[in-house]
Image (cartoon, rainbow, N blue to C red):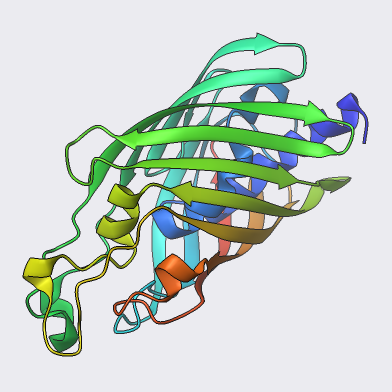
Length: 274
């Protein structure tokens, strides 16, 4: 894949996001390979993703990371904005502040939604709510002959978990006329503060019979994904996102988790606002 092909690939990557309107953090997390590809976007009537606003809706299904949590299925409206430097993707905003050859550098703000409310399950009685937090981070995207590489870090700036997350992601776009299919895989590393807050930590004060205190510690996950997009015509585009996060044993062995991973699936339709 040469640089020109990679640039078209970046266009397709954003198409999947636009079509699926990634307003849910669980799904958006698997789209990290898309970060800061603004620099290689195209804008035509056949491009899988045009610049500007795209509005529409997505059918979403995703599993909870917790063993007592239920899966979520919903249809949700939303919209995204893609520009040369600024990008809005529902729960996160990116700004590309520098470019050097095939590398682009970006800043990132994200609202990570809460994922545990004790009122939702009797098994969570006595636990503290895992609430939303605001995260800020920096990252880079590299366009290479073997695919697109993304690396970034982000930290809580709201004082909620006070944790940090690191990501390295690789994606291999396959591009056609008006369509794109992109398999990818990422590795996520979370420090103990973030992992304990959102991925199964049990403090001594939260311990109960059948729920011992548990320190997740630093933990990593493997996140394969498949993203596809199709530009139907100048005004309409569609997309699919399939993603899975496989937990490492520090997360999977938590008394709150007791599972090997979680999934997200979206099918979306978007209207290109021109």
